Image (cartoon, rainbow, N blue to C red):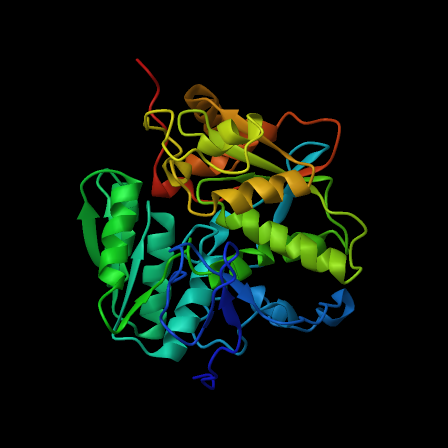
Amino acid sequence: MAETRMPTATYVCPRDGARADSSTAAWCCPVCGGPWDLDTGPLPPVRIDSLRTRVNSLWRYEEALPLAAPAVSLGEGRTPLVALTDQVSAKLDYLMPTLSFKDRGAVMLAELARRLGPDRVVADSSGNAGTAVAAYCARAGLPCTVYVPEGTSAKKTEQIRAHGARLETVPGGREATAAAARTAAGVPGTFYASHVFNPYFLHGTKTYVYEIWEELGGTLPDALAVPVGNGTLLLGAALATAELLAHGLIDRRPALIAVQAEAVSPLATAFRAGADRLPDEPSDPVRSTLAEGIAIPRPPRARQILAAVRESGGTFLTVTEDQIRDAQQDLAARGFFVETTGVACWAAAGGVTDRSVVVPLCGAGLKTGLAPWKS
């Protein structure tokens, strides 16, 4: 068992500047109720020539991480980067221990919870974050309850139960599920393993970009296409590119191409309207989509997501349900069986020919099966 060292970084609210010790269980800003960012202080650069003999997991980038010496690692990270076309490569993050990229952030939350020693851990998810938190809490020996919306893939709920977590199915959609989990998070002795509100998760997902940077010999592609619901992978990517640029390890930041399902695309709509936030009231009804993992009508970090895409010189793209079906079949024909959310970036950016792009294949096809075709 690794030595237990309490976290030293500080939570800070990006909206009003409120601060809290990250060794507390404060899961949101007490002033505005919004999600935290993390003030780690200056982080030293990751030197690519120092990585050769390090552990073969995301923890090899120890200088860039707010926690060190983990006890709950399952060997996550270091997923392959494979060329699909002359310009587009795929990072196979569905080859993680729980079969999705969410392991990158979940291991950070579970390691943080282990050090804080709560009575229980709660999480909310449309599936993949819940399975990841359940697995890493099992590894850490922490009791865990995961709240999911009704209609969540049976394979994902089976995986959550298999890891020993208690499953709570919430009537309604993703918003109702998050509300139920936040109510439970108010019980004393509870650690809310929120992949949206807790910034340690983002510092896990940023390793996705560090791995691409290492794989490409200290460079990054012209663009990174990222599926966006709550924006945890995109914001992690923005963190990583900012850090690499600040340390002089890259000479430019790649454009962030944010991909949403056309059926649930509040951020794409706001971006195209030139807005810096979502409207106070949703303008469109929530529709169903095959890309359940990014079907988030009111992401709490909307302002940060919109700002990150603009600052990178990127854009938003949307994909239809038929494009999602086609992309899943196309990838399967190439040897990659990917869940319906995980094919969204290939559907949006697979035809790019004028610049280099990396797309993530975020979740295994076994989690949802093949998308049904319309009769």
